[in-house]
Image 1 (cartoon, rainbow, N blue to C red):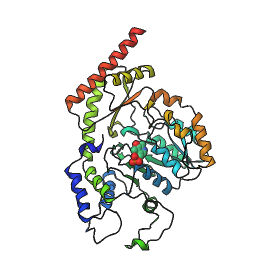
Image 2: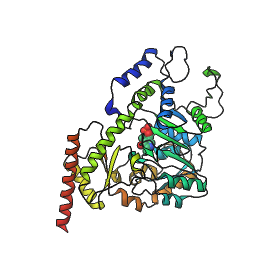
Image 3: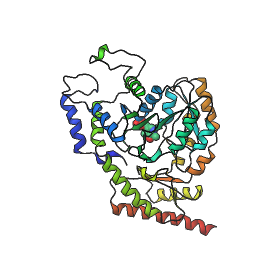
Length: 405
Ligand SMILES: *Cc1c(COP(=O)(O)O)cnc(C)c1O
């Protein structure tokens, strides 16, 4: 999965271009930079690669989400409907603009359940934010229909699904805006970085200013720029963008390898009739960063997780149900509203509600789910070995269960 597995001469070359001139900042210094504009070049390449009209690089995926929300006019008291299974960054961004996260259940797609979204809509709802977790996508047709019907913004958190597609369109380019993360463990990396993609010129212009203290970037003299609105500093550096430029050129290779390794591992696990797989709204668009599979019950799944640990093969196998970064159950800091600074009463009330909310439907899915991350470096032999090890320990757990019954 992660692009860092394929670090090499290409990345060093791009970074060296920047080191030669010493112009590490993406804006200004037109003369001394001698035509080297890595961030601009990466934005153009992102637009071409993913079929987005505009792209604004940022310092991280989290700041990309924050930027998108600000540019889409999401703020104080607005409700953003999002899944209970995601990375903490998704709600961090919602909270950072003063908005309110409304968490709803996921289904066997491991993303938003459209019916749960419908039930969560109130007069305050402004945005639906699907998170395309673990390389695959939400049911976007259903969500788009809901958003149209209720005049809501669709913002795609596609941070984990770079290169995934839904009915021929790249994930992250289908809603009003979408984001990728280029942090160190994502499909392609800049070390740290992110991007907002949109087909709306006004939204793009706002993102451009917002990520650079509100600068309008209209002239060539940075000091003379006007500030039509308040912004922050979420800029990416030229060094980071340089790494990303080398990585994005390798993306097709990464995706090919992921698909091949994913297919091979899946065929090994599919030998066991008790194992089922994640529902994928458009299977041909899966970026295949993870293979997510289900066992029949929570008890069996926990026994399998313990067995993976006992046999020293837990690395790369994620049981999100017990994971404190990705699932509501362990987000105590959110549920207790533990902030370093005062927050608004509206946000406080919303978090109190989340703290006592039941997520039975999500629990029923997540407690039976294990996701295996797909490495770019595996050989065919290693996949076979890994797969067979998992198969044998699942069989062991199932047999013990039958014997006990
Ligand atoms: C990684 C990630 C982010 C945030 O990205 P950073 O670049 O680490 O800030 C946001 N959402 C999801 C689903 C992610 O996996």
